[in-house]
Amino acid sequence: MTIDHESGPRPGSSLPAPRRLATGLLDRPSGARTRSAPSLGRHRRPFRSRAVLPLSLVAVDSLAVYGAQAGTAAPGLHPLAGAAAVLPLLLPLNLAGGLYRNRLSLSALDEVPALAARSAVATAFAVTLAGCLDGHWPGFGPATPLRLAALVAGILLLATCGRGIAYHLLRKARRRRPSPVLVLGAGQLGQRIAAALTERREYGLRPVGYVDPDPVLLADDARLPVLGGREVLEREIRRRRIHHVVATEGAADEAETAAALREAARLGCQVWLVPALREYGPLGRFPTDHLYGFPCLPLARSAMRRSGWPAKRALDIAAAGLGLLTLSPLLAVCAVAVRFDTGPGVLFRQQRTGLDGKVFTVLKFRTLRPSNEHESATRWNISQDHRMGAVGRLLRRSSMDELPQLWNVLRGDMSLVGPRPERPYFVMRFGQAYPEYADRHRVPVGLTGLAQVNGLRGDTSIEDRARFDNRYIEGWSLWQDAKILLRTAALMLHPDGS
Image 1 (cartoon, rainbow, N blue to C red):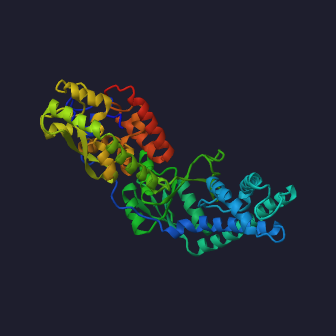
Image 2 (image 1 turned 60 degrees about the vertical axis):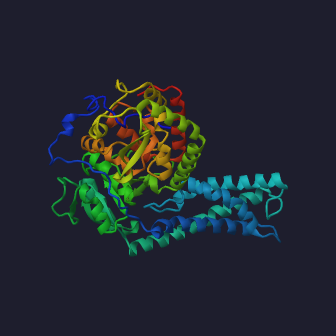
Image 3 (image 1 turned 135 degrees about the vertical axis):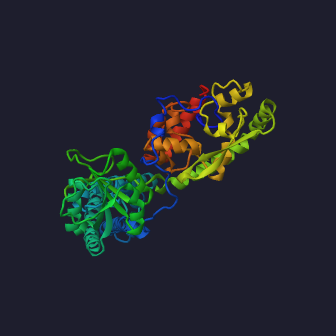
């Protein structure tokens, strides 16, 4: 359940404190650059172009295991049984190690150490399991050290050779049908990247133009046009069927660059980031890719395109449905208390902005009755409002006024975890004041979120909230949702009434 109370009918003060909402920024002239909510359409990369390399490598590794088993199998025993014991562990290990991800630079020899380590682990696990069952290697009889060493060596040799062949064929296919790519940034680095992609066709990327709002460093003899700034990104991606974007230093200011990267990822593009600094080793779980010697970091897919997102929605449905069912007696008690405290109209309905800027109606228990609709939509905080009765204060301090939002979660308007929803009036004003605020709407809004469990609820910094919300979206995982829910439960034990 949420621990945030920044929204709702809040007639305590007209605007947050100056340090939290810069009114000078909000009152900028109409011609100033503003951020709008993301558009509704989503540009999808063809499945075959995303899956051809991973599926080919899975097939290569499977055939390598089968071939190694066939070469070391005892007479009369079928190698399929041994392969079935190794593959269920080897394939997930390779997947977790990034050996099935799409890459620009393809080298089978670079993957030999990772393949050798994972092949040895998978084989050792299968041998241990077989020993626990009957003391024999499945399909091979007794597993002698020499036979096991030969099996690991065979898997490694066949997988390396198979990957070398697959990469050779993929390079030929890339040369024949390169994919159009946008270069984000027309500075010196961007021009060098565009030149490298044009000359080295084995990467399969054909630059078609730069996206840069202020290309001051563009050479006079540049062969590619500057298509415009970030405002043309979606149009060009759709018109030119772009599925790759290469971002470089010198694209624009930091906020514009971050917004462009998020927009490209939201539209389904694979985004490659080429930093100016090259003196570093591999980052994260996977080795750093490179583009003709330039370090190249693949950015993660947008949260809603990751494999675990359907499980998040399934968890929302199950938890919201179970919560409404088990908490129905408490909901009834709250409704009766609110009826006696504020009169008719137990539920409070208010417009909030959710996924892709869509507006929906959020439900809460009424804690006070605002003077009019304008006050409900535009006043900020009611935590100290004198009109709030004892029941309202109790509901807000305990977060029980938010319980009806479980219905919003069940309907799909919200999620259990996500950026907190705000009223359209404040979304418009915050979007003008803070460049990253509109990016919060890339995922469904939530009952609680990373910003709230880090103390950013009530009358706190909007800029900090937007930063935490975007950090949540970019690093989303099911485990992160679980951590936030656990931290929310802990914080509810010490309500502060914010």
